Image (cartoon, rainbow, N blue to C red):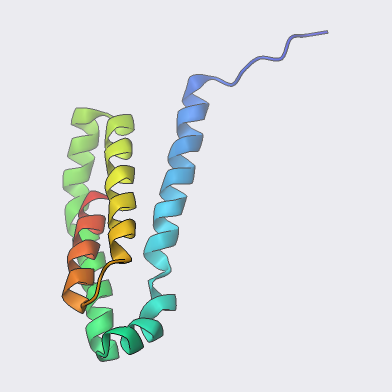
Length: 114
């Protein structure tokens, strides 16, 4: 009987990156589910709430070249760990947002680092 070999370390890292990025994208693309509740909670228009989404995606696109350079400099593991930490803090701070500007600030933090 052949001994069971553990997977190569690269597959472990790839799997962790996949799960992490899948989770971050799930949070990013779930924004539409929160538009109506945020309209009611913050007492603002749909345009104001979707402005947050617009700024989020704009920053995400603009910062990706910088993130790519940082990944080359720091390495994927360090950058992913840092990004996951900041995304987690941003998601946690979302609970405390009482105005649309606080939510916008947290989205900017989240999108710049993820």
